[in-house]
Amino acid sequence: MAASDLTKLNGSPTPDAPSEADLSRCVHCGLCLNACPTYRELRLEMDSPRGRIYQMVQVHNGAPITDAYRAHIDLCLACRGCESACPSGVEYGRLVEAARADIEQRTVRPLGQRLLRSLVFERLLPSRGWLKLAGAGVFLYQGSGLQRFVRGSGLLKLLGKFGEIEPLAPPVETPFFFRHLGRVFPAQGERRYRVAFLAGCIANISFARLNEATVRVLQANGCEVSVPAGQTCCGALAVHAGLRKPARRQARQNIDALLDGGYDAILTNAGGCGSTLKEYDELLKHDPEYAAKAKRFVALMKDVNEFLASIELNPRMQEVRASVTYQDSCHLAHGQKIRAAPRKLLASVPGLAIKEMRLSDLCCGSAGIYNIVHTDMSMQLLKKKMDAVNATGAEWVATANPGCMLQLRAGVQKWGHGQRVSHVIEILDEAYRGAR
Image (cartoon, rainbow, N blue to C red; front, side):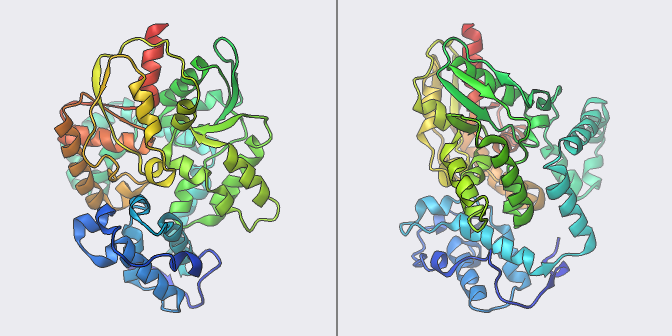
């Protein structure tokens, strides 16, 4: 999609635009540059965090939204690696999401683009029915032999953009996890905690087994696990796309479904989702009905790795004799500042040898739908990530985000040495199930 396809509107920055207070925290020191994947690849100042903030300041001061501005902001992965490197505490993730929201509200896309974005972000992702229908269609494509034919025939080379992104399509796992929504799973042994589990949106059809493994691991650690029926998509993909209205609707729905259940914690197994879920208070800060509720929700929200690492872990596991390297999920490491917890959980598995990779927290190129809209840049980053993975000699790659799992599996197919790619929780589940 070319930036010139958009019609720019006149007017001042919107209420969702980056604030002067947030912009002024950047002192333009440049320590963020080497932490930025796009700057490392392109060596262009305007595709660095510092350069993008400079452009945001110009727009804040009245400069027009240009094609070049939108292109530089859009090329950002929003991985937030710069936040970990910044000595001034600049919350760059907040800034780039605000810039995208401002761009979205001050431009008019062509009708086809508007309809597609509305279908994906406002109809498909929040809708159980639409997701089931889409999942069934993809399942037929993948399971009928049509996918093998298309891949084996060379047709993908003739299909342009679709041919590039088809290998990144997530496999559909049946039965879908939707069947568990509304259920309560009892703790094994004495109940120590009552937790709610957010199952996600696409994860219900593409990571159903991961969701089930998450429930089992929590049960094995004395948790009664509720999967509230009223939950919906967390809104992360809409936020990243600059679409604040649907994201806020989804945030309100999740708050209504989970907040007053008397839970000790609300959990997610997706680092990308968790980062947005923990920022509902920012998303809804101007909502008089939900601002206080959002703060209470955020206080309960935890990543499943974070939660399990904070309690006394059940040690009854079978040995798993393998070597594993851990790939940091960007939004877990940089957004939520959680690095030690997944490694602590992996270290608790008997027999598992951990081999740290170089630059484990540099983005793999997944970044929500980034690998679909910026496939070339995404693949450049993935190739370098796989070089780092291969250098460890590990048989297994662990991560803590479903999007990273899809990207890394594609990387193993293209450049890997046959490594398994799993979520940290799936490795724990394997150890617990072996012990039983």
